[in-house]
Length: 162
Image (tube, rainbow, N blue to C red; front, side, top):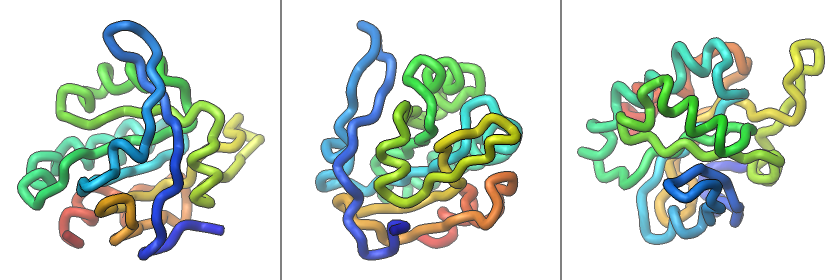
């Protein structure tokens, strides 16, 4: 079942690499009592993800904060090491985007956003989406029809909806 507006996001443990190495991140801790934007995408270093989706949230990060958003989180079915390197190479980390890996796709599957495209090597990856949640409850959800496009799931669209 795909998550919908009004649903509570499931508990999940995601990954990042901190100063002391790999860290587990409890998503519930990031959501409790906070206004959070999460955007999911098929993969680090992939075309549309790198040239359109991540940059769209970099462009509007400050404006989202001005609307009360506490944190903007990028989730991809990659490990924490890849997400750290990608955040550094795109400038997303410096722009204030939290880059978290869903290495085993458990969060992505729990919210019904998984897809596979074996012909191009994408197995159990994430559909392209963005959502806004308050205290873990989804208030806005934008799901792309095709993982190769970034139109309704981009940062500018979500900003206009808040």
